[in-house]
Length: 289
Image (cartoon, rainbow, N blue to C red; front, side, top):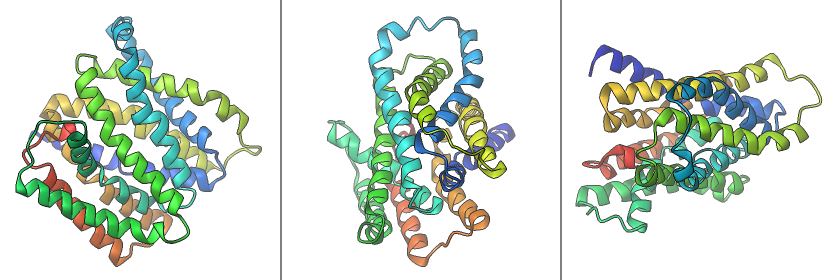
């Protein structure tokens, strides 16, 4: 991989590892779930739409609007709201670790929808190891004070596993940047009224405001631009490897900047999930997970 490729890879590992921290700061600062999602999507759309218009009018939208709405629902509309709601109770570290199960869930979902791809013994082992890790991580929360939040994050992980399958099967011929801009615009429109109805009574603190701006500009607009550049540089399969690094970044950010606790069981669970992801996706294009 070229030096530019490594720089983009490192940037994506960080940029998509810190949203959990920013979401946590926002919701703990009194920002409503709809407001968090609206701020992120509206700012992202504001940056990406002008760039997308350079590709010309979205004539492809007429033939692809149904899968586009489905993709938006599974990638943005549902997950980003559920994440914000869950982080009202969970730490950003725990949230990031649970999301690490996405590649494993992706393999399971592919099998459930009738994927003809055969699973080797190594990949079956990876599924087992990864699911044990998820169980170790989630079980204490399911039996404790935050079962709803744990379930919400696991639902997000399922959504994140389904969305790429929709894109690969129904939107493969749609240009990525315009598609992303349209999805963000749709989400911003959906959450505009709920956000207005839950607008904070007081001006948010500088820290909270910076988190909302960071979510929209850094973790959404800039992230997608870097992501597309990384795909062009190294290809989709190699580009998606950074998803293995994101949870570790989320943990480090939560521990160092928010003073969150990393327990031995959380570290062990993450190790199991990471090993499971590597094994379960071996020999398989990560873009499908």
